Length: 271
Image (cartoon, rainbow, N blue to C red; front, side, top):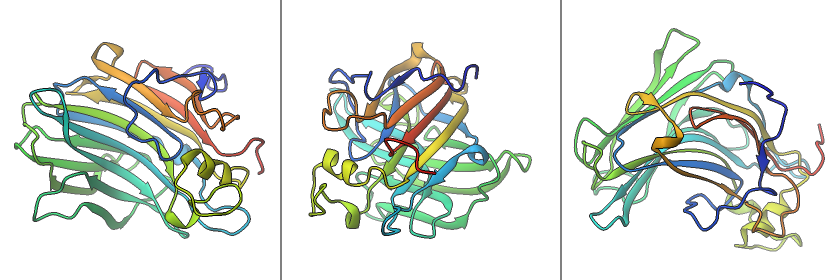
């Protein structure tokens, strides 16, 4: 990635123009593939990420996520199910670990899962999300790139409605910071469900996820290119007028196969 320090776009310069943004409850960047895909990979250069999720004033935490996903559609093109699956950093004493979240879980499956296996943040990892083996079933693998692509963690789970041939599924990449319920407040400190107010409440608290570097993203074993992508979106975008500083910062991108971005919740860096 060339010219890593040059800003290509931010939430102040980009507008989603009404296109789908499924992660609109905290700072996030998402890119969505077209339908017809059932296998995606990304290399997460975790060792180079700079992260702080603890608020400066009270040490309450935000959560950080780096993940792939699958959207399932019916014959009319309407979404019927989805899953997010990848890396999470949650809790006051957080560490990176596997998670998944299924919108409509099957009867025998939990909706939300977090692994007890903690990953080494000094290593880099390859995420593989694959729904090509069975209808209604997917598998997430996390391979340790630093340790010769050994399996660091893996899990299989149901995703009801998906077809293994990929005919009714699309894939996504998502990089986000999210707010636990105990910090969902407006700028006066009152409980709130307004995401712009919640973001401003958590601004200038020294929270950030910087230098998020993604490489070798693929769809169905081919580079994730603009031709097979549907669109990208971010939250906030420049239609969210209350948020008046760069939160989502894209520094470098090679189509959709490589990416360098920051999620920065400080008007001026505090560290």
